[in-house]
Amino acid sequence: MGSRWTYSELKFPSNELERTLIAVKPDGVQRRLVGQIIQRFEQRGFKLVGLKMVQASHGILSEHYGELRTKPFFQSLLTYMSSGPVVVMVWEGHNVVQASRKMVGQTNPAEAPAGTIRGDFSVHVSRNVVHASDSQEGAQKEIQLWFPAKDLLDWDCYDSNMW
Ligand SMILES: Nc1ncnc2c1ncn2[C@@H]1O[C@H](COP(=O)(O)OP(=O)(O)OP(=O)(O)O)[C@@H](O)[C@H]1O
Ligand SMILES: O=c1ccn([C@@H]2O[C@H](COP(=O)(O)OP(=O)(O)O)[C@@H](O)[C@H]2O)c(=O)[nH]1
Ligand SMILES: [Mg+2]
View 1 (cartoon, protein in one colour):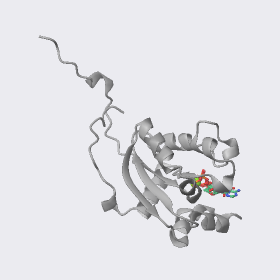
View 2 (view 1 turned 180 degrees about the vertical axis):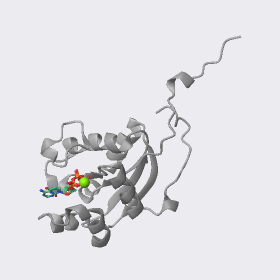
View 3 (view 1 turned 60 degrees about the vertical axis):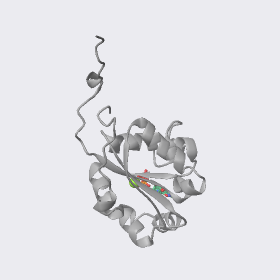
């Protein structure tokens, strides 16, 4: 009788439900980068729990970027972000907020290392392809702003305890 192999030793207990909001900005959608950006979060091991394509209004964007209201680039930021569809997503997993900021890279793509999304796909701060929440608190606010709770799916991933 051969023994059955199980991989429970490889698993770690992952009851956390940390979530973050990621958005492919209008330049990323125009440049057909949506698939490659989703692929990076999937291959890292995060779980997609919400996804939609929207043409964002200045109203929602003003709230989303409320902390930047006094910045000189605020109006141009709203114009840019409402210039075409954005693909907004909620990703879940261990340490997903901090990990996704590292995957996205610095705000200014000139400072973002190769290997990060901004470092690989963009050159200028005003067209930096992707948004990622910058804290757990910010993520919760942004998720509530963009998604009604019923549109976030709490589905079981067959390998969810692997990472
Ligand atoms: N000096 C600037 N000129 C033009 N646009 C800017 C400038 N600084 C920031 N932005 C735009 O405003 C966005 C918001 O700035 P923020 O400081 O929140 O950066 P971030 O947190 O890296 O970006 P995001 O919130 O979109 O993930 C930036 O991603 C960028 O698109
Ligand atoms: O000097 C700046 C700083 C920010 N932004 C834009 O504002 C967004 C939000 O800024 P934040 O500081 O939140 O940076 P992020 O979280 O996007 O890295 C950025 O992604 C940029 O699109 C910009 O156009 N000019
Ligand atoms: Mg930000």
